[in-house]
Image 1 (cartoon, one colour):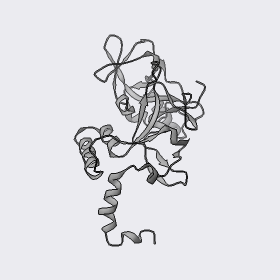
Image 2 (cartoon, chains in turn yellow, green; image 1 turned 180 degrees about the horizontal axis):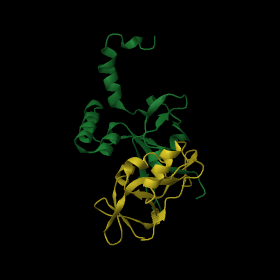
Image 3 (tube, one colour; image 1 turned 30 degrees about the horizontal axis):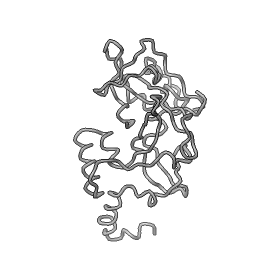
Image 4 (cartoon, chains in turn green, brown; image 1 turned 45 degrees about the vertical axis):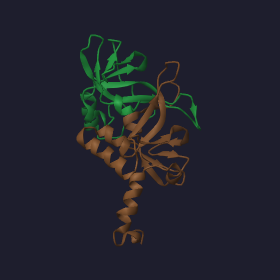
Length: 112
Length: 130
């Protein structure tokens, strides 16, 4: 599977109602050893509706930026949610179904 | 989460891939995710680059044209993108460093074709570094 098949995919809840699209894929470097590094394991999906604002990363990382811009971006992205991979169901039509209804806000990236 | 945490779009996609001498290899246009046999979460097994990876990501008519050009100029019979196994990755920072050079990987044949048959024939092309 290519990552681009996940990015931008529509996300629906268990009832089939659209709740956004996949804005990003969170990876954790604790997979099996590949060469000299541990593999990047998919931990979950960042879900929301505003792709362009999400590309800035202000809502997930402590990026140096003008304070006004950072506050505005975080306000726009506050409805984003994090879908852990064990609650992901990939549908044959390319959509992603969230098996949980109670999704948490997107955790901030540690150390960024 | 015990290991380092990255977001794919923020920290990997469109980043440069460098070889160990600092030479430019390619950009990360997509990554390959593979699920283990036990049904666990997938992990990144390869960096995908070149028009064969970028075209499907862009999609639409432009995406199909990019892939067709890649196939024609790269003298390939399939649309598969160029692939760099994750085993070759030695560092992930503002750029991704790998343990082989571009010539050793044998990737981006379409770019080499354009360089050999178009760019090199432009008068003055070999004086670029002067």
